[in-house]
Length: 312
Picture (cartoon, rainbow, N blue to C red):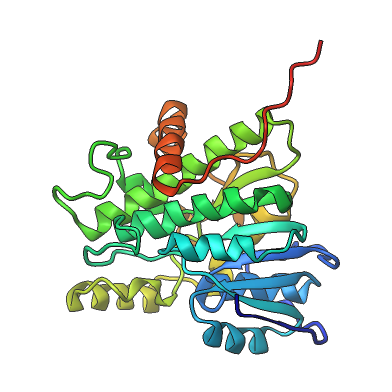
């Protein structure tokens, strides 16, 4: 496993909608996709507050460039969430160090139909299954919380297509993305239930950025769609720093497990971070349990903590 560590003086906290970041000295945060966009903004803020930030990225070279720009205490490790072998290699190389914050930030958005290394639909496989496997493999080392970045577009998914998870019948980029973001919320719901049952103090939370201008929206495979998204990024979207605010809010505020954070503005597209609602489909306990079982089958990874024994 390629990794590197860099230490320097703390840089200043960027200006964004969330100004309540407490001192993070002595804490370790693992952030997937931390070399660009929301992940980079999240990493920069936490490093500036004193945390040791592990940038879990597909390209170590780009990760090193990001780490140099971030300042603070950083470390770069390779992780490809679309390849379960890479996820396992990352976890195997962790060496048992405590992780205060695991932030499942990386993702792909509205791609043309394609498959992961393991044969899963790319958006479901990367956004959900990769993070599902990573979270469970690292969970024995997590001491505080797991924050998973979802999207307000989870509202476009009426439910999980359990009879066709890879959407082989009627694939559309939006349908696949919405399903993967719904899966993020159901994962958080079931993870929190299992943590509570195990008597663990670790909390599972989720967040969404509203509409934030990042390079995530430029890979649809359609010039028209990419052009429309680019216009939205220019005239509607907020900055990556503003988009990262709900993630930071979920990562450091004393919130109940299972909470979902997002912007407080109209249609939750922008604004200061607060707790927000989710669809009935994203609150379906039975669907969350079923998705967990299916995810264990597909990844070969299961929840690592034993249920707490009932007290006499």
